[in-house]
Length: 76
Image (tube, rainbow, N blue to C red; front, side, top):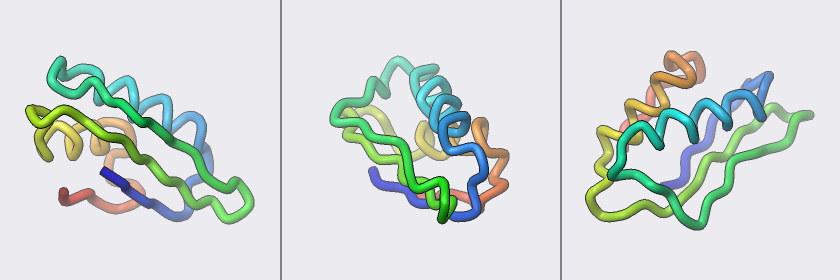
């Protein structure tokens, strides 16, 4: 997965929430992880590889829980 969002003021805070929420599902222990961005441009990139049993619903739910879709919805 690789998800981008713009106009993110608190990139470290949002990244922390994304990882915490993704780990709520035991099926989604991520590997090859990255979450960060450029504070000046406020562009966030969240990317990771997940096991096959981690489905798009898990990822979309983690995004919604962390952002309340403030930066747009994610459709994987």
